[in-house]
Amino acid sequence: MKPGRLLRAAALLLASFLAATATLGCTAEGRPDAMAPPPTGGDGPSASDSPSPPTTPPPGPGAAKGDPALPRKLTAQRLDWKPCKTRPGGSAPGAAWRCATLRVPLDYAEPRAETLAVALIKAAATGPEDRRVGSLLFNFGGPGGSGVDMLPVFAPGYERLRERYDLVSFDPRGVAGSSGIRCRDDRRIATAEARVDLTPDDEAEEKAYFEDAADFGRGCAEDAAGLLPHLGTAQAARDLDLLRHILGDRALHYFGISYGTQLGAAYAHQFPDRAGRLVLDAAVDPEADMAGHARNQTIGFQRALENYLRNEGRDPRQGSREIAALLARIDAEPLPTASGRKLTESLALTGIITTLYSELSWPRLTEALDQAEKGSGTALLRLADSYNDRDGKGRYGTQGHAQRAISCADDPGRPTPEEARKLLPEFRSISPVFGGLLGWDTAGWCHEWPVDGVAEPPGVEAKDAPPVLVVGTTGDPATPYEGARRLADGLGEGVGVLLTHRGEGHGAYGSGSGCVDRIVDAYLLDGTVPEDGKECAPDKG
Image (cartoon, rainbow, N blue to C red; front, side):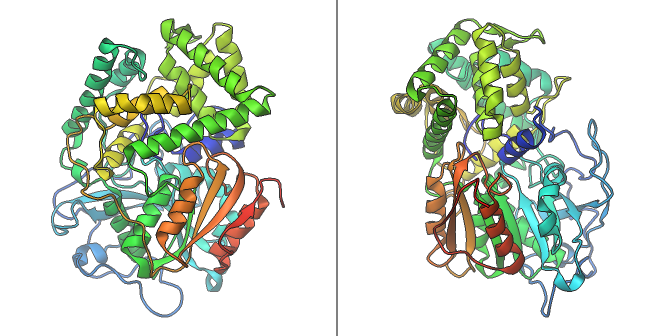
């Protein structure tokens, strides 16, 4: 999902983790992971000049095709799967999991030069070998989410899939345990959260807002200047293809959520003859530019907020005005919290946004708003911290750093501050709560970014690919439903197959609809393609 200064965590992690555990907090803290070394010159220690077979042979006759433009030391590298190391401040995922590092070219135009590390995690299939389909690769969104952290958390919901697939995920280039990026230290992040108003009200606040945006970009360039130009989705899709080849699969079988749908569609566009069974859940609108994504999210989050208010028995318009008034009071006088920190308007907005990813977290919004009306910002701050990837010791992860770098690399259309000001009336008319935040963000997200975006965003047309299952949820706040139809259409006639989930939340699979789960399972396990336009409700078995 993109853009969005606040909309930066891997959304499925928030929605599913909040729903499954009924506790707050982010498990993917994004701290350095010892599994993946930083970028190095040459081809790195895991590449080999002599041919080596893939760890797991492909099912059936034939061989996995690799990219002939890549050197043998990359296409013949052997993955050294070992028990996963415990991350600082975290825990190892368990005995079933193995971790490894893949080397990929920094620049595919010069594949024999510098390489990057891509951190991997895998749990082997549990069923008979003769029933095994291959590897199923997961991307949980962001961009910036760590698949190495997330897959073990969600794997209990994938046990049926694991009977016939090795479950595999990865940290894309620029993310977490892979050759990553950190644009600020914890102290400077905390200072910006406390001082920078993400909905500036006057000239001084605007100046501080855009100065902070430019400073963030400079920090990224200082940390990883050589990496920034090579963090786009098109490059990540080529990394996926190299991984597919090294895993020994003739076709890529893939499950992408949120931004993961953009990555999966880019893969199908670039490698239609190597696309296997692709599920794209919570689809990103392929037609939207930076302002278009922000407009879509303004619509989506306002829609989700109104659905929440109706569920509370409140008038949606009046309830929205009351929340906007509460935010205005917090803007004028931030609220005290139990931690001693102040709840600003920006942090309050983040806390509200957090709860809208899953219907099961709506009670937390009620509790947090009630507290705020009584003068305490503790609950909203706790929600904001979980979204901002901040732990109890004040340490921040790097999801937002990677998301910003990847999304700015992908999008050449970067609105100016003046253009953002012109958008504000429209955005505020759509949502009195979220319009200001997302309107300003159209310009602030990539303001004075140190590298140019791609000339053209990655395409999605994949007319020669097999059917791709696109799943959209009607109440999705972050990637509104309308984008799913556009993605299905954009993939091409006979390729994009739309499954509609009539429900709430970001991501349909595992959200409570047995109908969705059965259709997705049948597609991935048996290759059964549903009719285009099939609809499911969350309470239908």
